[in-house]
Image (tube, rainbow, N blue to C red; front, top):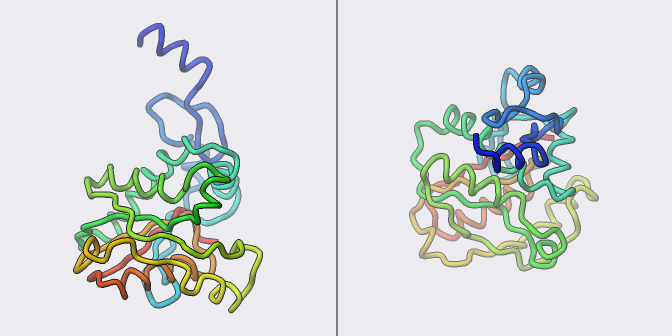
Length: 212
């Protein structure tokens, strides 16, 4: 290891994306958090009947890690988290060939406030690991209320018709994997999947980091 790398590691050590502990340079997550990985990942459906998988449940250190990643400008955690999602994708969708990997988009106003789209970071990492093109397929034209402030049918109505396809020729007859950070009721990612399906793609599958 060069002197420059040693200095970098001293001031900016590699950290576990969930508990923030310092870990070895080549590690992705600490051994303590690995021991807490769920035995079974979530395998269910978003609204509209679109299959959705998630490797982690939104609790404990996994919840803390995602909140740090999403709201506390810890976007560098996204690469480790995205890599950890890949194994679940291979186990669940191994028999499918995806042409495109995409992400649930943020409204431009929300994107400017946060500075990055956490779902895009996850999706780009997954695309790189699986050697599948990442493509922006949707844009959010409706600056609706934040979903976690709503319940039940209000969530579904809140995201209804909030997304539009950027270019239908990009998704025509394609198999698409759409990525988000968390699935709660499945309204948001389900609405995105429905919009893509109506836009002319062949199949849409979903993947999130956590299931609430």
